[in-house]
Image (cartoon, rainbow over all chains, first blue to last red; front, side):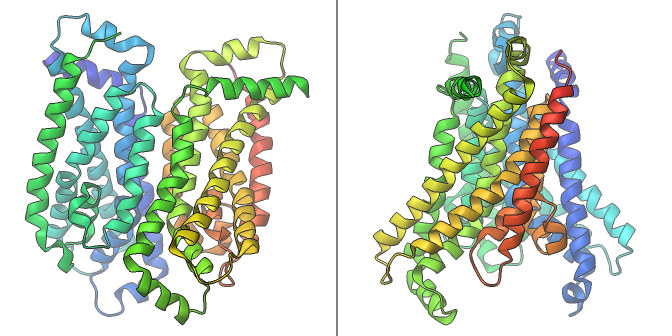
Length: 244
Length: 247
């Protein structure tokens, strides 16, 4: 098992995926910081905490557009390493269990997305200190909300992982990922957000203070249940599937 | 010309069994269905909004739809550009295609034209679907053809800058994910860029936002700079592709 993890990490090393997941959120934070600087009086004029404003400015477009799209990119990349050049045939001819490979690949993909969130948080911290923001850093919200966003995004990751592994063409998971991510911008503003898991990360990252997010605990419970269902059905399907 | 036509035909053949066609066909459908759902759920509120802002129903439809479409189209355009070029990287196709007696410029332009045609298809389909949405909802005003033609035309010009930059990136970066991520980050930041007209002029990802025919929006950015960026990136792409080493 340890060997499989090491092998998977070596495969990812040359794929530039780590650059992607680190630089993409850093750029969004840079944009948020510039926006805060530009409208500083407007955003903090009524005594708002400047750190909170930096968080919100960096997070709005990140969580609504970039985060779900990046999940699609990461899942596609992880699956593409085997889908291209008949990699599954070579991989599974080795004495490894299909379900172990499937699980480790998913865990590593989720780990890469976690790095993406860490990169976002570190970028916010660096830009906040660089801007010399006043006020206390709201540590609890600052850490809890992105972590909640990560948990809330687990079903999205599982669905896109299953689709990426199942289909060799990279346009399928990417198309589905984007096609399902954009409606979330509209649905998140409606009372139907609870039935659409793509809105969960948005609500977890931005909706903590909103009345709509009073159902927060249910979301995490539903997310975990959905993750288990989607992952297990995907794993079963993968183990039963013939590799041609 | 015959040779160029054959190249484009070859590009279309390569995409015959790819999932690109469903993506291109379903993108405008999904976008307009969402707008339709938005209108169905909030029709009375939106009618009130239109009356308050002195907008016709057709103008309101475009305004509501544009917020979603200005992100949706560039994101899918990014995937289309990456996929068309990725096919060659995946199967070492560049070697085979460039071993043929055709100029590199023609190969590059053929791919650009294919990406442009697919985007053109999406833009026109989107306008037709919006027209149908208006008809199904039974808008009281007569269909505003000139408004729709203007909107469609602006998008066609504006998207050329985005296509130019994404084709340039996709042709020169062997890792499709990098080219796509640059595009996705650009699109995600487009609204931020659009806040400053000076900055937005030079960012092709922001041009789509300026395509809504509305007196408060500076359409000249989409028209002048979209077209200029399209030409500049097409030219740059041809130069870089001609010098590119195929290994």
